[in-house]
Image 1 (cartoon, each protein chain N blue to C red):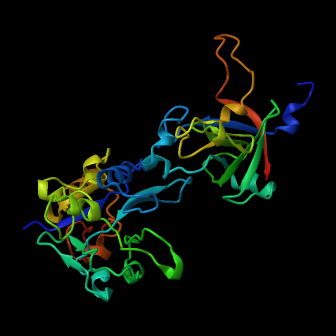
Image 2 (cartoon, chains in turn green, purple; image 1 turned 120 degrees about the vertical axis):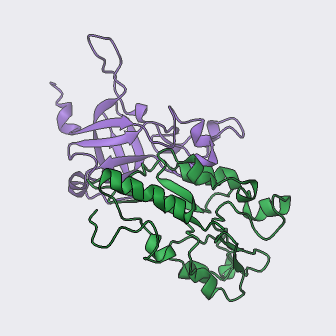
Image 3 (cartoon, rainbow over the protein chains, first blue to last red; image 1 turned 60 degrees about the vertical axis):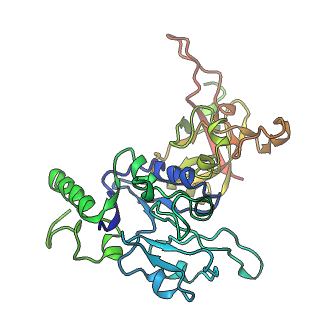
Length: 206
Length: 145
């Protein structure tokens, strides 16, 4: 079974926000909830780099570890999903997440946040695949339709890759060999552990 | 040059595009997916120019031009522009010299995001060879609002 992963290639990302827009449109995500966002470092100075950030579906997911009601679960494909019927909106996951992925729809009285919302790797939730109930809570289930996440499919420079971890790591590794630079994959080590594919060989220079 | 406009307006204002919007932006600013990504009209100012005027990143500024126009926009302090240049996106409209024009839109027709139009500031200049009007740049000054 494939283990689904994201890679964002900072050498290629042109900060077009196509991934953000694709995600918003695919899942009809409301204003203020950002399942995916583009972060730009050193904006406006030489060496500016952008990366697209969302839930990375970590191998050892901190959100899963801290959730007091165990609303998180992992699918056979390694996608970290959550059950909004169980979620109590406590926000622990947002403190634990190194990527700022968990989103909360409201800032109400007494800290009422509403149910947590995050990237599902376009894999929906616990409801029946493709059902209306699933769409309303989690957005479209593209994985069940045999499609990859809309953000990566839409990426105009193919900076954002989504799919089987071994496959996307191979694509990335070939790019690094071809261009001879840009071997760092932002977030890969944090999400999937440093010894996995996509990391540069020891001592490699970017 | 007799009126020494360049002394009152020492900066060059250039205008250009943002990836989220198209043209005057009326249609794309009405799309919430896009509008959420660019919620304010802004002017890019070099850190040195901003410091000389006591402007901090994210503050409101008045941009004035020889036409007498005064645009109220947000300052984006960045090294992307040189100290003698400021830059504005041209996709905005719906605010006029500090006032929101919301009441003038037919009901339900107002775009999600409204901002100062750069053409309020650009001048009557034109190219004497091609007779093309100059809507790309003008001279201007920026001060803290």
